[in-house]
Image (cartoon, rainbow, N blue to C red; front, side, top):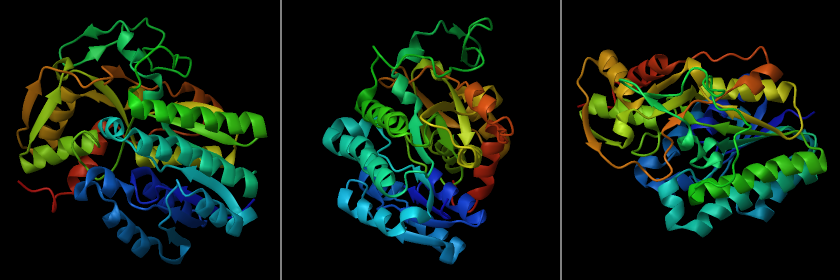
Length: 356
């Protein structure tokens, strides 16, 4: 097995956490990232700052390629050069926004779906034994979670305790007959293809269907980077718009460190064509109202929020991931960050940057 890990989206939230983690284990990291986020979200969303920090920190263990995952020949050449030295592939590059996908559906599909098959085929040709990890999304289930029998409580929506998914939604939820958004549909195509390459070509592939992924490596922008943006707004005295569901919609949040330690567990004991719902589960979740309350306690500042009585299309009213399947396969893995710990870390990391 090779000692090189190839990571796409290497300057993004999950990519950069993966770079640090696997370089720390003594592997050589080859990063693929062309800062498409700058194109998607403008200067605020650019990952250049993260890349500069990475190259300083990691040094010779990191080699960067400003390559587009839509460039099939470019990827094939890179993989041909690395060949059997590749011991792991983490595919985290994506177009991550609903709103954006609807504006440029071809770009969205080419990046999310076609980019993924380009990565799978390069891996199959040149490093077929390397575990292939794909960061998918809970949006593959579309708006099906919104048909759950939710009960309104004081600060959140909640499932009845006797419901089969009270502890979290598992992988048996159907992905059919629901509205996915254009983004969700392109991720479904990629998700299913990763499973298919595993089954059809007997490759060790895995799909991690993430909910709210978070951590200090996030470029916090409105509508992308929920907890980071909550903290930023409270610290800067910015107005935060809460869209629909009375601000009681529930999200589980997983810190990038906990997700990447799950990647490591899969890397050490890979399986074929696995799917895992991956998030903070019952250990780490909150509603919008609860998130602001925690942020206010941490900062000692009052949040400025405005309620918009219209939920975003396809937005989940309640999502808590059931991580039971992953925990059954990898019993040593544990979540270490809950929501207050995540928000506190963001506060401490950004005290000099996010000022009123």
